[in-house]
Every structure is written in structure tokens, then in C-alpha cells.
Image (cartoon, rainbow, N blue to C red; front, side, top):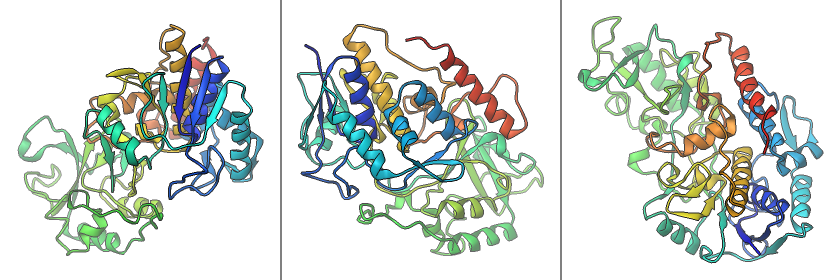
Length: 433
């Protein structure tokens, strides 16, 4: 009899375990709670929502809403639970987190094909296919073994990450493509500032409010290589102008002269729909990031696809290590799911668990791997975390920037998003597995 081991009963692990068990395959689900808890965990139940009880927007013409609708089409237990215990939250899907976790816990414990083993796993199973869904706080012996399995040096911790904006929301009447000293293929978008604009930006930056760190983030040391932009700015008025905003080697085509300062944006994906702000790792509150970074010439109306973050996160170098079915390239029996793969967010983690579970089943049953097209939100996210062309890989949540653009550009943002959603859901309407 085939058996699959799933490590971790968070959102991803529960989705994977139920997908596998519903196919008739025995599952051993290892969960260290309640014997052992990470600093983030409070409840003994499975699928615990650690921070917010919001699962983000419900509208299908939003990235978060499209992701959830795709998950519904794939039979997500998390969406089943959420729909049963939702609470009023305007346009968002929010839940009673206790009822949410209780529902999923009972689903798991009452499933005849799932055996729950309450202990912390210190090594990766060698005698059965497994799904590793141990989350962003994976540590101890298991973390060491994962790092060894991933050929060393591929288990990452990030202290700060920069925001990402949509390319088509940048104002190119002010911004321009160029590389320093005209070297390369004009790989960067440049947002020039004069002295007055820079001074105003610097003043707002050093006065902006930072996000409060969680208890499990506080021991982190801020390294010079990923210094938050607001921390660096407080070292002096010219500190960032001689750092990430240095204007050397660049000319503003509008003036023909070197700007006082320049914010550079670097391509985030192969299709060039997303750009990150170079050197702008930050721990500012999201609202403050939108307010302050929108002062940058060319970014006044920028759409932020991901805000900068600063916290502890354990994740593998998925672009180098994972196949698109979420198995390791070097060991087809080992699958990864959840935030440890580099997806960011509750539902993103759960969605990866669904995909890992389906692909474990397909492997055991000798079926073709299940890969969603990159014009679906789930397919695009997995394509992103497995894209070898992604530079400086960092976790990513659902956003329309990861989707390939429409054949015909639609200027109105709401209409464009609806068209992107319809394109995805038309695929799910015809999907037969």
C-alpha cells in the first residue's frame, strides 16, 4: 500500500494531506503541536492563522480574489472552511479564526486515510514520498537536513525586501530606461530627482512610521547588505544619495544633465511586467511606503504589487531547486509546499499545498504532472518561484504583475484586471482531471 508523509499541519500541509487522502492514499501527517510550538503559534489546532484573520479581497477582479476562486475550483478545504465561518469585513474575506482552524482540524482528524503523529520531525523520510510544509519558521535539525538536501546554502533568511511595482503604472514622462555610463542594454528604469525633490523625499522618509516587529522577528540583526532604506537615510542627508540613489553615470534625457539623485528600478520577472526598487529594503508600514515612495518622480501613481517587508522567513532557493510540480529536481520523492517555497500569504501557501498534493498523487498513480498555465494566478505564482531568470529571489504573493499581459492592452485598470481574471477562469471552466 502506498503511503505519503506530510510534515506540518499548517494551511499548506492540511491542503496537501486532504488532497492525497481523498484520492485513497494513506497519509501520515506529522505536526509538532501541541508538544512543541514555534514563537508564532498560540493554538493547538491545525491551519492556525497566526497574524491577521483576513484572507484579503473577495472580488474576482482582484489578484487575491482570483487566487481564491481558482482554489475553490480545485476543491480547497481552506476556502470551504472560510466560507463557513466568514465574518463581516467589507470587500475582504475574513474569518473567525478559531472556527476556521477547528473545522480543518476535525476534517483532518476524522479522515480515515490520515494518521496524525504529534511529534517534531528531525529528518526527512527516506522510505516514502513526502511533502515538506513546515512553514517560514522551520529550524533545528530539520532545517539543517533541508539545507543539506538542497545542496547547502539554499536555505535563506531575509531581513528586508524591497517593494515591487507594476511596470505599466510608471510615468515615463519622468522616468527613463538606462544603465550607468550606457553600459549594458538599458536594463534599469531610472527615476531622477532634483535637489528640492530629493530633500522633500528624504525628510518624509526619515519621519515615516515603521512597522512593529513580531516577537519572533525581534532577535534579527540588520545586516549592512540589506539595511532598510529608512535606517540608512537617518545616517545623514546625503547617505542614500551616495548609496542606492547615487546618480553617477546617468543623464536625465529631459535636461541632458546628471540628476541630484536617482531611484533605480530593476526588472523582477522575465516578461518585464514587474520592477523592484533597487536598495529599497524597508520596514515601513505599508501605508507609509505608498505615501513616501509615491513622492519619487515617475512613481506618483505607481501600483505596488508587493510592499517591502522585514521579518524572519525561511525559504529554499526554489528557482534553482524545484520543478514546477513542486518536487525537488534532485529527488522526485520530496515535494515542498507553503511559505518555505517562497510563496507569501495564507492563501498562496494553501494553494501550493493543493498543487503539491495533486502532484504527489499523480506521481504515485503514474499520471502526468499537473501544471497550471502561467496565465492562471496559481500557475503564475508557481512559475515565478520556479523561474531561473528571477534575480535575488524573494517571497511573492498573488498580484496581477506575475501574469503574462493580455494580447490587447486595456487602459482601464479594473477592466484589465477583470479580463485577466476571465482568461484564467475560462481555463478552469474547461478543466477536466
